[in-house]
Image (cartoon, rainbow, N blue to C red; front, side, top):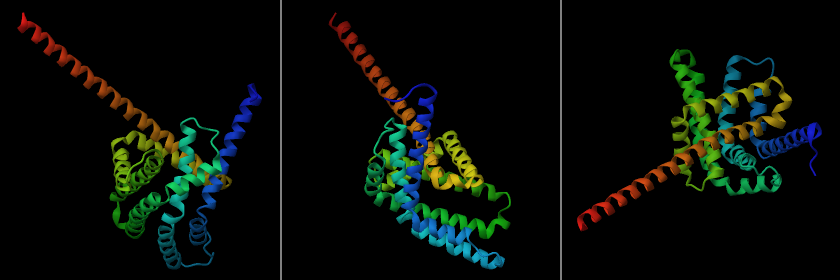
Length: 261
C-alpha cells in the first residue's frame, strides 16, 4: 500500500528520481562508443594545444560522432523514448529493463536510418557554420534557427517512431511537417530541452543521471499534446461530416415526401 501525505509525496518523488536515473544510465551505457568519442575529442583536449590543432580535432571528432551515432546513440534514444511514451500515457510501473531493450531491438533499423539522415544534415550544417561563421553575419541567426528546427524535428521523429507504425520516410517527413506546422509547440520543446541542457552543464552530476531522460519525457509529453489535438480535430471533422450527411439525407427525404404529396 502506497503511503499518503508528505511521506507519500516524498516516496513518489524518489520513485521518479530512480526511474529517470535508471533510464538515463541505460541510455548512456548503450551509447558508450559515441560518448567516449565525444568526451575524448571535444572535452579532453590537451592544455597546450594550438588553435589550428584544436579546430582539426573538433572536425575529426564531429565526423566520427556523425558516423557512430546512427548505430549507437539513435537506437538507445529510441529505446529511451519508448519508456517516456509509457510514462506519459500513464504506464508508470512498466518494467524498465525489459521495455527499454525491447524498444531498442524493435526500433533499431528505423532509428539507424533516421540517424544517418539527421547525422548527415546536422553534421554538414554544423561544420559549415563553424567554417563560415565570420561570413554569415545576420544570416547566421537564420542558420541557427534552421539547426534548432532540425533538432526539434529529431525529437518529434523519436516520438513518432515509438508511437506510430510508419515507414521511415513517412516518419521523417511527418516529423519535419509537425515541427514546422506547430511552431509554438516546437519553440516550447526547444526551450525546455535547452533549459535542461543548461542546468546539466551548470550541475554536471545531472548529465549521467537525468539529462537525456528528462528531455525525452518532456519532448514526448509535448508531442502527445499535439497528437491529442490532432485527434480531436479529426474527430470533430468526422462528426461534422456525419452531421452534413444526415442533413443531406433529411433534405432528400423531405423533398421526396413533398413530391409524393
